[in-house]
Length: 75
Image 1 (spheres, rainbow, N blue to C red):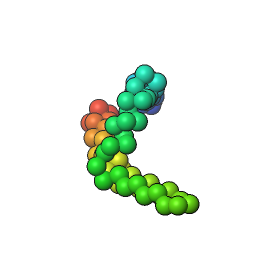
Image 2 (cartoon, helix red, strand yellow):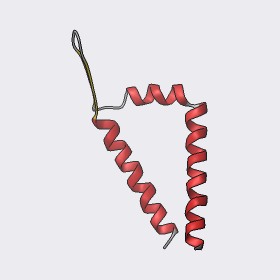
Image 3 (cartoon, rainbow, N blue to C red):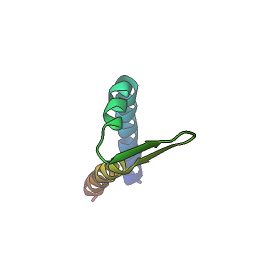
């Protein structure tokens, strides 16, 4: 039961930090997000395609690190 309490406490801290970053650094993060390598943009006459391959790889690496730290914390 204490593990569940630790989980929700850690989740609340992570959500608070993420909210703080997005609220105060939203414009800066958007500029950085647009210039990540391997994000492909194509605009035709009547259509636009955006394929965020680089952002997906970066997000995957960050989530892997966070999940590994989470499991080490609760071990």
